[in-house]
Image (cartoon, rainbow, N blue to C red; front, side, top):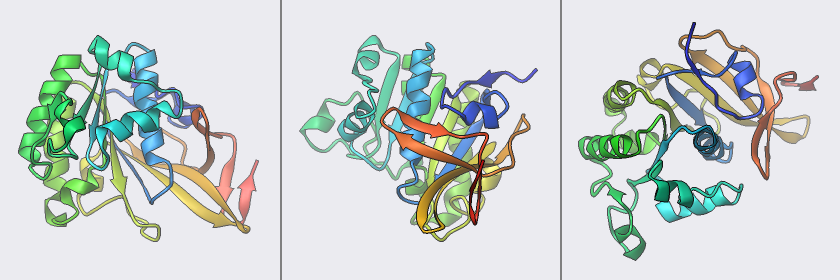
Length: 246
């Protein structure tokens, strides 16, 4: 029996046949505005509700903004940080600014993957993390695509080695059908793609699981919505180019 981690995201565990296999490193890719950060944050928040500590690595936004964004959905992580079961790793500010000085886990040089791994390892150990989100890994190799695979592999060693189940957010352009860089797809255990497409004159959000090691999964493209409580996926519906079919 495969040990699974329930995401708690409505509809997502259904299309994964029960959840993400434990220790998997999942690439969550998509274009701007597709809901990647919301989905990743929801995964962490639901983990906290299930008693599973988590770590959020902020590479593209100020840690303060990360907390504000989560709070908009009613996910207030401050109490969990105080309890020592949740941590935000600041890999954005470089420790510059008043707010940054109050952060506990700071990567002084966000482009230094070795330093990021060290700070991440400390945070994982301190909170005894079971879930991790890195948002976004693309930032680490955007200027040097040739190092993409080695970056993912270094992160994967730490994440899998500590027994965590992780989501690595990956940015792709709207027109790009890939998942975020050469070699990245092969290094990840799972790939989930979020899209925002025009179907019959309206924008439809959809999710498709391209691969997931250790489990069978839906091979269909399912619609989802972003509500005030987070993402809701409709596993019984399929998005086709000519519209959503029930």
